[in-house]
Length: 341
Image (cartoon, rainbow, N blue to C red):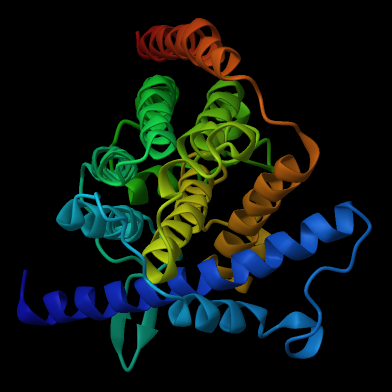
């Protein structure tokens, strides 16, 4: 790789990181507005026109809060834990293509940080590290409720990561590649002259398993057991304040954006348009539209469904999703092999 490519990747990484942090800020406003509308309320509407500057006000408030560390906490680990969660959340987006190549000053610029031939393995490897931040936060706080939240989160991630991985294997078998860019290009075909060749149409079971697992992986309602207020007060981040708490908050919402982008890439054609007649709009707008629809679905579930009981959460992952994902993977393999004979 030449020096120009390295500099280009660094610049693109900075742009993506800025976009994710900005997306996190306005995702909080988006969620509060959507939940308010569902509950027949107005939501934030005082700071700026329509509450547009509410995320900025929230950020300033968090930055000015007193940073408290419990007397008996493990200070180095307590400080490191939220950093791990945030860095992992940002790093996972590096291999996701969010548009086709564009030309800037005569240079062909790919709309992604990098493209590696094992992109999906990189994503699973990086995202699995996020639980370390939560577990270390729960342990280092020297608080029983924090520790229980960390243990719950680790059990939840292990349970649902298996089902998610097995579900995605069906897509990889069909595509024949681990590269996220290749997966998008594989879905650019058109079936029957009008139907986009998106994986959701040939892997609907895998899509449902992925969405449920993504909710559990990101600790979102109705699977937000690691921070259940009625039982654990706030779970693993009960002792955190100021910017350390903000890092956990940022990591959760950035993870929501990341899993939505992965679902878009794997099942909805990524940045590709639903019709060849709409290709002129460009890839980035289509990618953003699909991701926002997923994020709306996340928020809608939070405002609609009650939190499930913890034993039912575990049973859903081990008794239903994991066997179904294995069956889906084996059927996909049989169909692909049979079709190539």
